[in-house]
Image (spheres, rainbow, N blue to C red):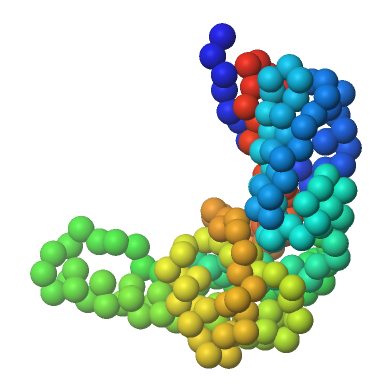
Length: 210
């Protein structure tokens, strides 16, 4: 049977237990630790690659990895799409402050000529208004929050447009992976994005199912 790779996502609070369980299932485990990834190689040939969240990892060991993911952080989440936006501040997985909003952006039209150009101009204006509203929310919610890290999602160009505002310049160096794919942000979408931003990504290379 050929090998397969699948990805699991583990909450920080579960990582230590997950690492122990991997060893129990697959035998002795060798750890290869770098500032950006931790590779587990088990006696039975199974491997798991843990992507270090909010890299770099300073203490290059299993204990260092567990301590790193559990370290208290103020996490900001910024989600921007043409049809909506959301900003939230999280600490230890708890949402402290947030704001979501929606903006109508005209859909495409099959009409040609002047009509098509008019729709295009209106759509561009609506998109600019949506991004401006997202920027104001980011300035109000995220800029003063003393964040340790910022995770973004939605539409990359829209996020870049928001972060170009000079009032948000201090947030740009705080941006870390992952970039989250999300639908138009609602409150529950924002809350789930906060959980997804904290989750540890583990790639499993295995002969069968884990």
